[in-house]
Length: 247
Ligand code: MN
Image (cartoon, rainbow, N blue to C red; front, side, top):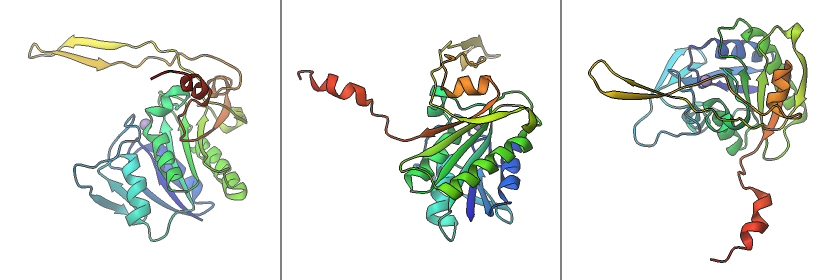
């Protein structure tokens, strides 16, 4: 199997190394990832400047672009054949609930899915320093094996979140739905050394609705969370309601 690995934490992150090492057990891995951290860039594509590729060592390429650029370039230019699987991660930080829309990690998997390639986004659910990336890599490997054996349903890619603990302490994977975050927006508002105001979007411990069946609920109880995602953002329940509006 030819596997492309990417991320949004940059090619030098711990998580991508752990992921590439784990996936080597089931295929030939090519790493094509941003040359620096690009977390929270979402599904952005670089259109107004050129992109450059740097081969760091055999099978490892850094691009001065976004995770979506990496998948796009890999499939349309860099890789001699289309990959059989794209795996993005292992992100340092959760990608749960509504946060998936900000995530560069998830967007890379989304881009692969758009191009008809089976894809998995993998995140380790902690913002703290962690030495559980290798264990998380073993979970990524198990999920990748299942995708290789079963294939994915049409129009589906997987968002996998892994609790920050040893493999032996994790509970079995649960298939979950995307949960809801309850937003506590914090904007840092200060003055810089030149007397000008600046603002910084803060981040606090994520608050979430702990509803059974959601990704949050699973992670909170040390289960691996696997959420099947698709790209159709249409709110189907709203269609008949809006159809009754008069314009
Ligand atoms: Mn990230």
